[in-house]
Length: 229
Ligand code: M1P
Image (cartoon, rainbow, N blue to C red; front, side):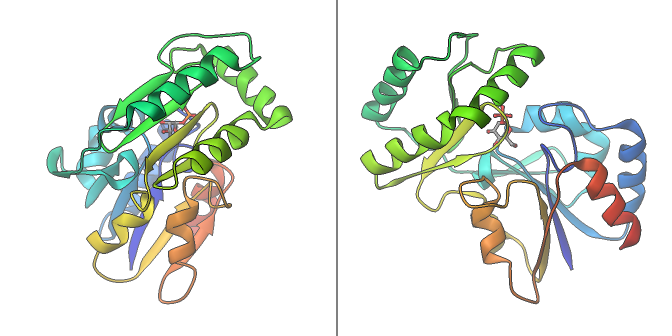
């Protein structure tokens, strides 16, 4: 069996480093197992969150929704994407028109193979992040923006990953693309496996045996489940 773990919300709190005790446990757990990591974030962020020790102990780390892969710190492949200017203009209009009052900076982040977009901005503080997430839970702003983009750009896919942003990529260039890079059955752990979430496309391909999907609510739950495996 190959084990694949989402990072934010599954191995760590969103955008935060891994808990030191869980890190110790996880390093021990992955010994003699085939383990891969997958994130919507880029490799430097994953490095900040889980650290080199884990990144070098796993079989591979897929970043930016599988558009790039690293094995023990070495780049294996990358798939670039030049987003259409009309999309950038639409994102800019969302920023001009959203009634959410705060703009912290870094709203349109171009990553390998995808764009991450956030109304509050990736440069926000932890407090601003929490406040936007609460606003979004009430107003469903991200789901609304997702729908507009997908209606206007049928060749583009949008998913809701973490707490404050949406991930945008060409159709099919979502996390499910990593299945073809891994040999054998996959047991996937993710927190955003519901429709519209950025683990959904991968999870829905792995629902039937020999594959398996475990939906978790946080890293604590992941740890409890791994302790019993
Ligand atoms: O890995 C989950 C998500 O983490 C971040 O989301 P947010 O900043 O909204 O919490 C982003 O890196 C996002 O791309 C990623 O999918």
